[in-house]
Length: 61
Image 1 (cartoon, helix red, strand yellow):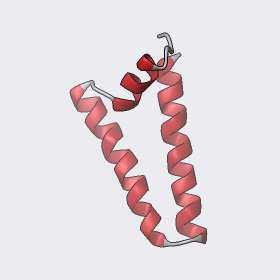
Image 2 (cartoon, one colour; image 1 turned 90 degrees about the vertical axis):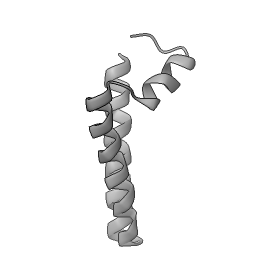
Image 3 (cartoon, one colour; image 1 turned 120 degrees about the vertical axis):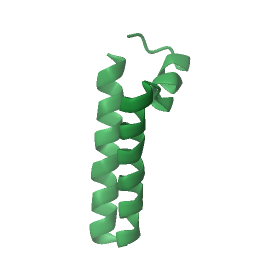
């Protein structure tokens, strides 16, 4: 369950930042790059901050 939540949050962040880049300012694309870099880092190190946050909030695997 936690993996699905992490992926959903990442997807929501990416979509929101793309909408903000289109309608507000293109600098919001840096947020998209940040989310992508965190996904890449998570796949390499097998550590994800959002996973830790969800664990502390009581979300089960």
